[in-house]
Image (cartoon, rainbow over all chains, first blue to last red; front, side, top):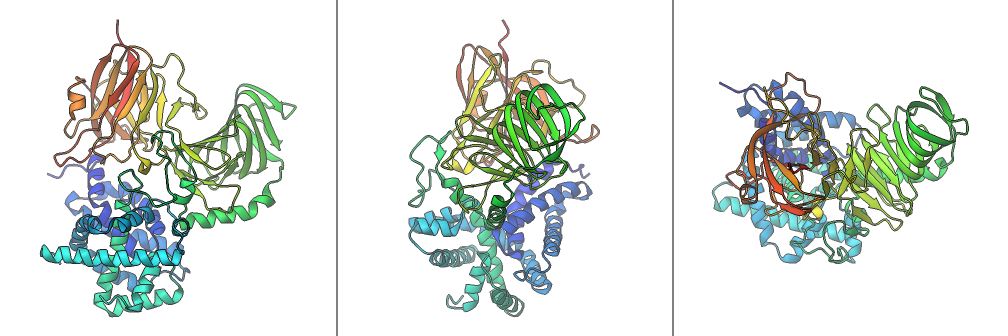
Length: 175
Length: 442
């Protein structure tokens, strides 16, 4: 018999699925700050509704559905923002993210290994650029580079990491 | 994947928050029409999200030039300028810069209607006629020489002012602390309330926070609930966020130093960055968490362990008795440390507790997981149990996380080192523990 959901279960389930949810939300909103904002609201919404979840085995699917609704609500608040995808594109991204969720989880696992393969200076740069609240223009200024140059370097690193994680997953038969 | 595909440039700008309307249109078309590009975009953005998790500013990763930490010990080290550099998220920047533009205009002092909610041993120099509980008075400034005054502004913002303190009002959403300690509660309204001090500006986001404009020119800021943003008044720099359970000391050069210990109490104004009173058995708590931990503080509450007492400084959980049991008498009214949920994955973090005299030191450890050797070899389980529950949960709510009580006799004043909390079978953390102390029975 299914035990009554409670906080202990919630914390465990949320911690388990938070990276996937974060990635999912990130793919639907334009910036990392936006994703953090949505995730904060999502965590509260999930906890408030957790008691309505019939079977905790459905947590992942339920949480992704909630995340999608949370992004929709966030979008409604910014309906005139020209920098958001339209609903068709968003629905396609959401659908694809859900279809690929296991592969994306595996990508997450592979990323650590791929980060370890980066040259030390690139790894250091990534760590500094993604540290909480960092501003690329200030980081660039401290390194004597323009912000645009730094953005491009980070872009190339991200593409290299995508290629690396794809190769890792292919080797493991997960791609 | 063709690295010269111009759509990748649009994806980069989108991921970095720099996309134009045209970029978004290009990406939309690509996502709808090109399944390969769609997969790449999804993977790219997921990876962008995951990188935040792996990023760190830690001793294990050398920082780029210009991000030196002066090689000082992590605890209470000044992080000169670093916080401003690290904390400038784009969305925050907009607000910080917006505030900057109207600040000089609104820096005048005007009269604001204030409701007096409470006065405790208050000696008031201004307003000259003094104040009485339930008064509604129009104030441009408050000079409280001693005691405490709790006020409500028309914006529903509540201020607990602890004398000696001097305050100027700009409007119902804006005040300035000339000196002294003010605790601000915006829970009932007033989101966006601004409190200036001589060296920084604190902007409420959704919160309860405390500010102490000290005689030495520095300002202490601590967040009890929610989040604030600190704005540098000297430059048009964006704001630095400070989260629940974090506290910093800001000086005139905008250097931030972590305040590791807050001495607490049960009332809003009962917090201090001074050491605990002499009858408190716990003198201080420190740790070896790195810079990734931000500015979390431990709150030492003398005689504060009881049902309903807060467990962590950055969570809303409270202690209560286990189901069907009384609150353990051995723990009631013990001096208690509110710890925080931080980077518990670190394999070997250590917390040092300094005690003032011989004590029984208690560790309140989640029952789940595997106790670590520092605990099993030095502490003894008492067989007692406490529960942790969400603050505000009804009495009929189900039981939450059980905690085991462990104790150790500390025969003399000194420092005791505690280690990581329980681990699961894979070595992952299962939660954070609490700390308490009582006098060692004779």
